[in-house]
Amino acid sequence: MKTRTTLLKKILEKMRENNRKILFLTTQTEWLAIARRFEDSWQFPNCLGAVDGKHIAITPPPGSGSFYFNKGFHSIVLMAIANADYEFLYVNCGTNGRVSDGGVIEYADFNRKLVNGELNLPPTPDGGLSYVFIADEAFALRTDFLKPYNVKVLDDFKRIFNYRLSRARRIIENVVGILVNRFGVLKSRMNLRNMDNVDSVVLACCVLHNYLHRHASDSYTPRGVLDSEDPVTHTQEDGLRIDSDNVGPISIAHTRNSTQDAKAVRDAYMRYFNNEGFVVEEPLEDEEPGLALAADCVLVEGVSAEWPDFCCRSSVLIDLTRSNSQASPLLLSLWF
Image 1 (spheres, rainbow, N blue to C red):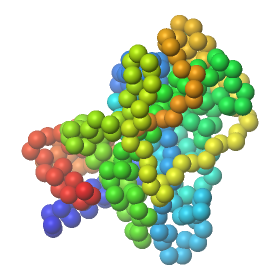
Image 2: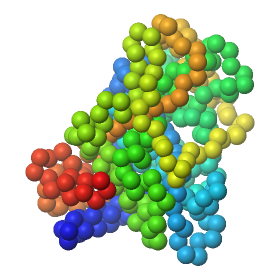
Image 3: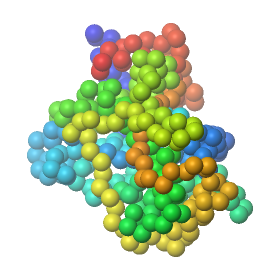
């Protein structure tokens, strides 16, 4: 037990040093591979990730007042991005629940890197569709963030776009749904007075989610846990979803000032999905998103390469894939 506690403390310390985030420092080649997987799996070209945010209920620390209060309970916000293979690409945790929902992305380190051109994203091909992240109504429409058209003004062309976006974005809903269902600590109101520990525990769950999906899928993500789609009829079966009152969605952003450039990017995708990118027997009904899984390893800045039984790349990679690693059984015993 002492060894387990020591290991957990080391991991939590490294996550706190990393400013409450997990970020894959992806190369341009890796971004292109992510985009290809979205196109191959979900017929959504040039997509670099599916985005979502959730409120996680907490017991507020003494003296915090209404700092963490939103939606009738105290919370922190988890913002996550997933790739087409149900892996977390980015996780940011700890924004206080009082922050306006539309502004959650603005506070994320990921957004700063994106705006400043520090993510090494591939350039938009000449005459082609822009590289984008896909989100729901809770996020503002931008040239690099696509969201659905307003359901009050839908024609068939826009309805097709909304379906295709929802179909691809179900990945992140599936990921978060599995995360919450598998890690009981997220289902109940988290009662850790030290908010740094709250953030770090959530991040640790995300690391474990990635590892378990890749290396213990028979038990962690068996048949029925992931969303599925009939290849002929396109009917969809939902996998796991969030079934806890202690995890809630962020609210719809009521922004009316999307730029013309942002609208033009979305319109270009709408035209593509109704022409050369059209899928036969495309359903017109609005679809609910799904849920998913994870990755081999998670890049956590500042992790020491001298940790025993961890394979580290450039002193920053926690690799949970080695068969002789003592990390996985120790960590798994903490939450299951």
